[in-house]
Length: 272
Image 1 (cartoon, rainbow, N blue to C red):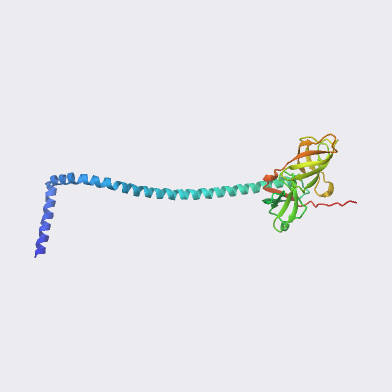
Image 2 (cartoon, rainbow, N blue to C red):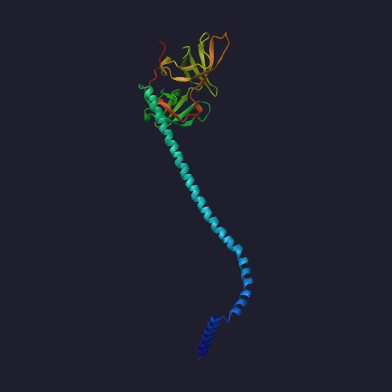
């Protein structure tokens, strides 16, 4: 019974509130309530603002970090794709250069090889290429640059790679001649000192700027392969032979790809 009375009182109060609200009788009370609670609401908003800003900034920072990770991944993928395209372009250029060389030397056969290592001891001028006996490479074969100048000779062969002794190696000696005067001599290597041409007669005409090429004597290398240019001529008039400093035509320290002349077989002549 008490519960029923309570429900009736609450219902009548609610009905009365609705009627008074519709008639506008409660507006003064609403204004008083708003006046009282408005400063409290503003204070609560100011107090909660730093926390809201922190949460908002945290969410934005997480979004930015996610976007940065995605951008870095995309940049990495694009960089890898560019590197692959450059490598493909380099390979295509190698093949195109090989085709031009083969066109100019129809009787010769070449094999493109990539430089994969250099002698770690720094006591020898040698480099390794990614071609070996499985590719038909043999000791004594001539190695050339893509500009068709002599780089060196195959000195050691394994199944899948080979070592090339450069013409600048101290143990390298190449029979050579000056094309302009046909003066002959021997081009020798010297560790970290480039090339020198010796054993040219004192009266031979050898001048800076002259072109030096293989002479073919001895049968170790074909004739008329470019070696380089005379950079300087040393010696005194009373010396028996002239000595010339030769600048290699190929940039031997920057070689990336070379050509192995597989069609030439060296002939090692012996004294009669």
